[in-house]
Structures are given as structure tokens and as C-alpha cells.
Image (cartoon, rainbow, N blue to C red; front, side):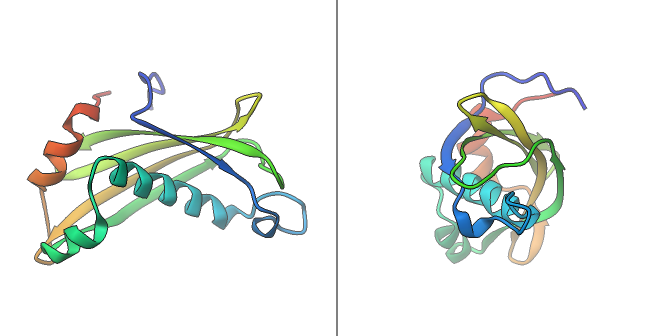
Length: 140
């Protein structure tokens, strides 16, 4: 996959909490999924999109595929930058997400998360989300 990207569509700074770490003193692998989910949620909110309002309109966004590559561990009290870019592939939205430890910007995680919209329970292209996020779509 070509990793050349323009500026991320969205960035969010977060901090590791002690209880997110395992006995090895590093962030538990499952916690990274929470970090990237939180980033996507905040991105959508920043664009005025609410999961609950979408659901009320019969639109549900669901994860269809998730691939995570762990690069270097995050540890208690680390501050990190969560970056997100989005690509449109047919009816799918692929979020390319990266976590970078601060202040050294060491790459901690790369994830590709594929989302589909279910409209009235069926996978469909979602014009509402297309119109909101089109300015962020990139092509490889």
C-alpha cells in the first residue's frame, strides 16, 4: 500500500492512562482499537455527524474490516497524536489511521478500518456521508 498522504483530515491528541496497560507496562493491544474508534467518532462529530442521529434516520455505520500494525509500544502517561485520513472505495469508506508518540513522533500504530453504511439494514452508498466527507477523500 502506498503510504504517501497529504495532511491528515483530522488529528486528535490523547494520553495513555495507567489502567490501559498490561503487566508488561505497555498499552494492551485491544486498547488501540478504542483509540482509533474514539478518533473516528470525534472526526465525525467535528463534521456535525452524529451516530445517534444517523441511526434515527435508518443509517448505521459498521466496521466491516480492521487491520492494525503495531509499530512501537505506548506506555503509561505517554501523550500521542492520532491522525486520520479517509478514502472512498465504492460503497466503503477506508479510514487510514496512525498513532504517533509525542514529542518524538515515533510511529506507534497504523490501522486501516473499512466502514460500510447500512441503510434500512442493507449495505448502501450513503449520500449524506459522501457529501460531508468528500472534501477529505483521497485516491491512491
